[in-house]
Image (tube, rainbow, N blue to C red; front, side, top):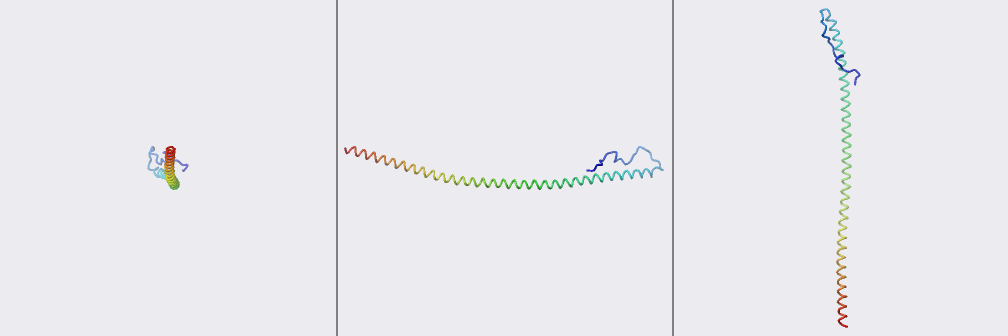
Length: 136
């Protein structure tokens, strides 16, 4: 920003407190014109500085918007990768659970068959013992 600041004092181009005579009009008009030119230069300088600042801020805004968009895209990619990993893990768990259920069913069936076989053997032994004790 320009070191020259706009104040009421340096923008005041006409001093209306004095009465101007006909003979002073030309010199007073020349003085007014010089003051007005200086005020215009100050305004133009400040406007140009403001335009530079606005352009700089617009450029920064574009860069920051691109950075935010890039970071958001990276974050979305990361989230999608994590979701894919979790999905694969859940599929693996489902496969393992299915396998575990099949094995558990096999063990239950085996246990039931073994219990039935043991019960038949016990019955056979009991019958054999009863038959031998009846024969004695």
